[in-house]
Image 1 (cartoon, rainbow, N blue to C red):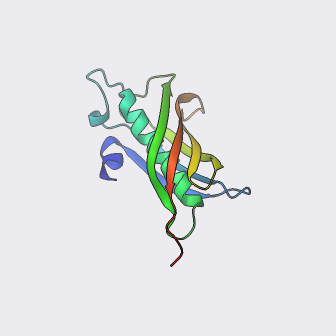
Image 2: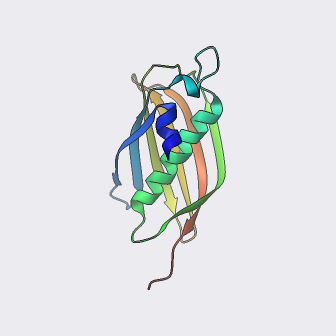
Length: 131
């Protein structure tokens, strides 16, 4: 997804935890494209990155050709401003995986670990029949 890089985001690590639930980690150093004229990142950009983090975390735990198909529900909260040129840590984690739906959480934290924004989401899964 080129838009992730265009706004300053990148995902660098992913895996599966001991409960077979996926996770992804990355960074966000906002570009001017992501912000209002005051240099504060727009809430929609937070949603974009957290939605992607949750999708990637779910896909990290899926096997074969199984993948996320669509975001069914997304709730994003911003607690602190994210500023252009400042570095942040992105993380997505699967909370629960069912046959057709997965639930996940995403967070954006400053380098001191303070929560900047978070999101929860429900995702439709695509699980093609075995060939």
